[in-house]
Length: 182
Image (cartoon, rainbow, N blue to C red; front, side, top):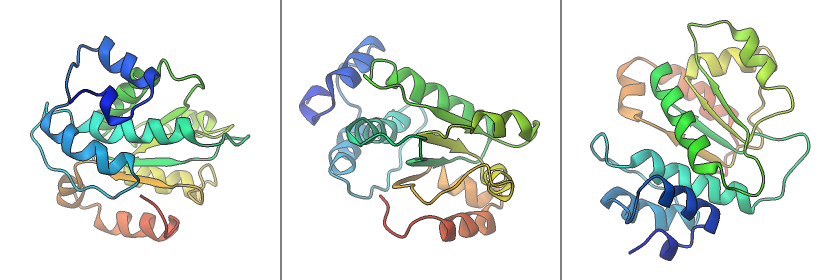
């Protein structure tokens, strides 16, 4: 099985190829087909197994295929437990999206730093947001982010989100999201 045979766009296949990936890893070959069809996926694999690409590629494919709104409306939300993971996932998205015909705007937000630059970055909207739950709630409280158009949700390292005590924040965020989402 190749990435191209999964139905990914030529732009995504080019970015994958450039990174040296030749064939999907087990988590990718199992998660990509149902995710690309719009199904919900629960995946578990070791660090370094390609999990991030397994959820980023379907997100980028769907955003590429969707109509662009002006101003941009947040379509995909990726919740992560730490700022380090947020930065890592954001970099992966940018790397995989670089050949897409329309620029994908990614917002990476986390606590422990000033909220003002993150609020400024949200002006004009974003297509994808990678966020820690607490900082996302702060941005919502400041009316810097709206979740009403989110159609794709990822809980990256969901076990760590819960282990680190984000259960209440996750419940608050889930209540703000549209009921129909992947």
